[in-house]
Amino acid sequence: MHAGSFWKLVAAVNCFDGPISAELATQAVAGRSLQLIHDFPKDASRNNQLCRIEVRLLEDGYRCWIDLSEILSRSVSCGSWKPQLFPTDQIEKRIPNVLTWIEKAAGRNNQYLWGGTIGPDFDCSGLVQAAFASQGIWLPRDAYQQERFCKNLEISLTNYQMLLPGDLIFFGLHKKCTHVAIYLGDGVYCHSSGIQNGRNGIGCDGIEPFDENPVANYYRSQFLSAGRVLHSYDGTSFL
Image 1 (tube, rainbow, N blue to C red):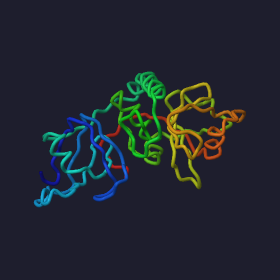
Image 2 (cartoon, helix red, strand yellow):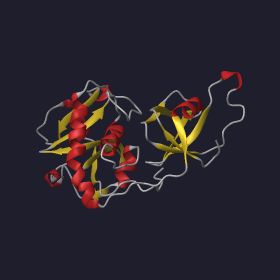
Image 3 (cartoon, rainbow, N blue to C red):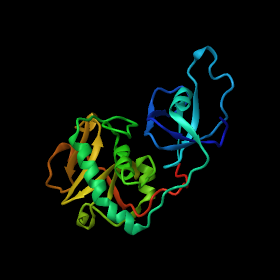
C-alpha cells in the first residue's frame, strides 16, 4: 500500500478527524473509493497497536483518517477513479427520488450523530449528502462546503416562495455556515439537528414566520442563504 494508490470499500467504515482522535469525522459506505495520502507504515502491526492512515474519499474529496485494519479487511485495490457526472437536466430529474429517500430516512428511528453519513443516524450535512448520493449525485461533505458548491440563490425569509424542492437552505452565525437543510416545498424543510437545539435527529420544520415551533424559530434566526444543486462533485477539492 503506497501513497497515491486507489482502494474501493467492500464494507462500511468509520472515518476520524485525526490519527488518534476518537471523534467521528464521517462514514463511508461500501462501494466508495479512496486514495491513500501516505505510504503503508512498515511497523503498523507491531504490538497490535492502533494504526490509522490518512486518506482522501474520492467521491467528495474529503480527507480523513481510517484504521489501517479496516482498510486491509474492508477494501480492495483498484486501478483508478473517475467521477460520475450528470448534466443539469439529469440532476433535476433525480430530485424527486432524492426527496423520497430523505422522507423515508426521516421515518426511521434515528438520532443526531456528529459525522453520521450512512444512517439511520446522521448529522445535518451527512443527511443531505447521503440523500443526493442515493441517486449518484455527490456533494462535498460539510455544510459550508455544500454552500460554496451550490448555485447561490437570491433568497431571503421574505421571498422563500422562490425555492424549489431539493434546494438547500444554509444556517449559521456571523456569515459562517454551520447547518444545512433540504427544502421539501410548501414552506417546509427537512434536516437532522442535535438535542441542544430542541430535537435529536431528523425532522421537518417550517420557514414561515408564524411557525412557533422552537426548533423552527431557532434556525430561522440563523438563516444565511439558499442554494441549488446543479452538478455532481467532479474531483476538485473544496477543503
